[in-house]
Image 1 (cartoon, rainbow over the protein chains, first blue to last red):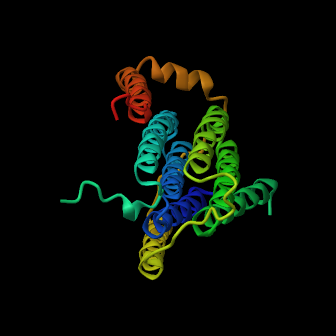
Image 2 (cartoon, chains in turn brown, orange):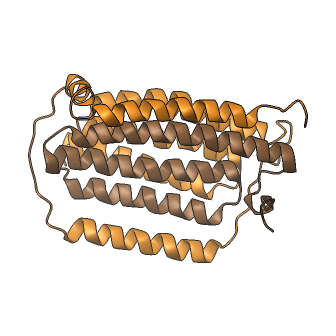
Length: 101
Length: 165
């Protein structure tokens, strides 16, 4: 019998991998991918709780909102990355220091 | 082991392993394609959790939309004929420590806490979610639609090539 806890562990692994990517990768697109991993981990948690703990569909509705926010985030994020690339000819986040005084 | 357990372990391994490839691969295009496998794995987990609508949404929006956008990002920020689609890594050790610590803490909480347990037979969820959207969650629903509109317009504005520049 698969219980709530196993889903939580899988989601924790996904989230930790996302954090690892966020901290160690310097390519802007790959950082966006890591953020997607973390959002997916949160979604797995929401759906698992909705199934095993809450007994209602509220968690799944929240997961839909998370997907909406993820779509908006990736659209704006990629727009910024592309503009930055046009400006600096590099997707490396460490070179994005235009705002530094 | 029951059939459900077998399927769960297949999807869980698939998801976590491909997520590891996403994060650790040095080649961007491998990352992008293994993100596809991760999204499929998560969709499989949704099916196992009885969330049929969300599994379909996951496939449509993540695989069909977000992943394609990310692939465009990979292609547009590198010359396609440039085989050296490599990505730099920094702070690998400290990043590993933080991520591993986070995983240990989250897992410990997940295993130690006394979670309430409601057993519910899986049922179709689409009509229930639709009803919730138009009743209890009406305001967030409208806010989310405005957010999407604003985000898409903002994205179009940001990437527009200015004539005077």
